[in-house]
Image (cartoon, rainbow, N blue to C red; front, side, top):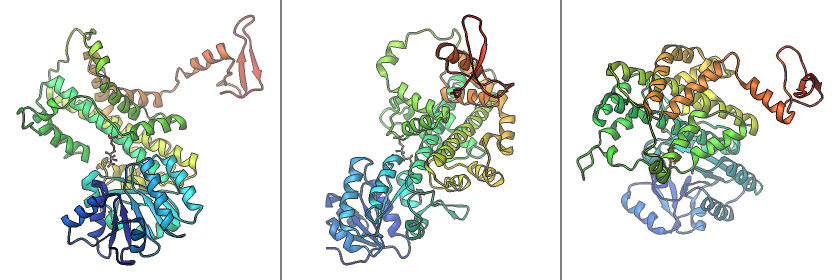
Length: 484
Ligand code: 6PG
């Protein structure tokens, strides 16, 4: 039975992420952690496996509430969706005004906005917190992206700082913004994660086809890349995945894994949200679509006999090709982050959040899945110019694309010629060229829209909204309507 008011924080939901966060919390000085799970079995297991941890087990929500000192602070770690609502209902029934409920799952940010509003109405604080870093991060130090009120942050800040990863002496957690801001930023993090993973996968595929290197040899290439400007968690683990040999067959494990990529939805949300906000996150979108395409076995089987290029990819200078791919990966990766930050800016504007982009880059430097050396450069870029309109135009990134763009073009062209799908490499390059184009064929699109729908257009040489009488005397008239 729980003893009264011993714990300063509680965790509800003791699957792997919840258990690991509870252990992480309990391992920090001064923390005592109330733990509760719907079925007591998981609570008992956690207690039995970690008898030394400062846990206070609870068998009911009433006991859980009684175990917590005020303001009560509870971290919910259950599967996002209806389960989260059920736990919130149960907690609000036993909590009091001023208490704090934190949802650490991968919730859709609009659900978090809705929940925050409903819970606030009864005087309880609700914080949607994105938590990244997987199982190991949860245990040893994740990157944490909390939203919610400034009042809740006062209590929560020191607790979250105590368990977060540390990068260059700073904890990887900041108060991102109000209500759903934290889950919004976590969603974009995951979108960038999808793009980064797809780009790395395309680099691997190109090198394998182009040079005939084995997965283990490509692992060595990635390990080498990880010592340079591409240093990141995803490059590091990719090398490990490629090096892994299947114990059943003795083959590289990557060759026996079914090539159909799954997803839990956060990448899709990023793209759906970006579409609503009108932000081209093409690198992220292509990564989501690449997973979707991979998971269409019937279509792939039906199309497998369709013609491809007459000559396969042949590379004469393997080392030069690998270096081209590395540069193409770096450039494309910058575009993915640039697009992700554009979505954050647009989301902040739409939902009235004061999100500090440099701070976001900072808390992504450690603990999270997209942690990477070059995030420091993003922090610097926003520190130097908080009003930066496109990350890729910051001096450091402009220098990188100046150095890498020729290689990037060679790789994309060669991939197209050789029939190797590189949707994220190619779309990132197309985005880059679209962004820097002096004049886009959007002018023609406006003409087409005006032709069939009288949608009007603006001119480059005079103010006003125009419509052309396309048949008859074909004259331009100025209209009252607004161009759209
Ligand atoms: C993290 C990860 C984590 C998880 C996602 C994405 O930041 O720790 O993003 O949240 O891996 O669920 O998974 P899917 O690839 O299954 O969508």
